[in-house]
Image (cartoon, rainbow, N blue to C red; front, side, top):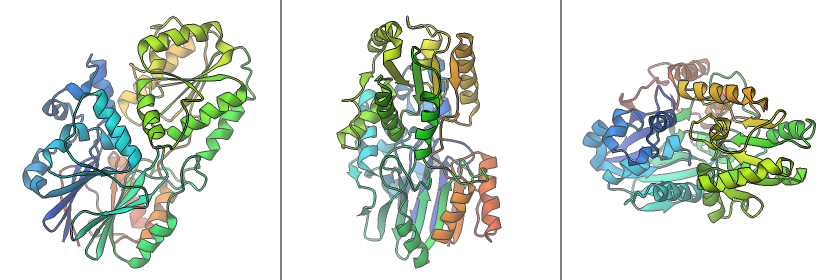
Length: 447
């Protein structure tokens, strides 16, 4: 008998935390944060939410409430497994992991990002760190083995987690996409997924539901380069400033933008501490070599100095900065609010290479920054982006590959989870028997 305990991420975006019990051994998958709650706390004047107590963060609904889980299953936990380096999967590790007497298992890139996060916050994580490359595996105990299956997503070294227990396998796929033409790294390991399906040992698939209601498949990251070519080489921009904002964790996108800036004959400038967290992690393990090509500005005084130079010679630079969600403390938002001496002028270009994360806070912030930019006469290009999340037809193919006995949608609001259940029912799964709509705190036995 295998039992699943959803703690966070079921009925909401973020705060991902799932427990699986195999006999008398427990595995935790992910310890994330609600990113919009982080933004909310920062808007209340709390510059560093990680310095708030764990209890206060739970009270503010920023991190998973694992109190009941810890009391009942905590002493059985053998490992914490982090599937990739996005904050909604990794951030709460800084606050929750220490009370579990077990190692944290992650890929080298994800480990480096966690190292940067904890160092920036001056937080020591006492747990042993075990690094496994995508495609590798690790014996947690005599009966438990974890396998990291390479998956494409919007940050490097994302993996689909396979937990093998006796003759059964749990697949935890939160997050992933199918991309046959990734711009950095390998494509998802279809062969291994098909092998697991053919074994008929996959007891359950727990999958990302972010885009499950999209009646399509998610397109390749390689398309984004052509989107940028259409904007940058066909729009008049000879004497204007160019600012691009994207997700700090999207190292492949950042790498592409730096190369495109050089192709245009402009000097790439990268601004923002959160971007540095991911870039430095990627460079330490030799995934990219960006900072030798670009000027990196991390701190406010560096950014202010560089913006003065850009204002004098705006046609010579190509700025990549934080602010794709309109976060109030991001570089782009501060420029839009005139907190720096740089002033946007008519026909300057701002490109949002990101979709808006579907939460109320992000929607409001994004509208606010776009309104401020329009008032300055800026030319705005939105949604120059392809998602890192699987759409409905990708998930259909994943289910066909793995042939799981049970399907559980995760990582989404109720409407997203329901759309996942609808797809499962289309494929012959039965609600309550082989397809399960779970919420935070509701345990489920799988057999």
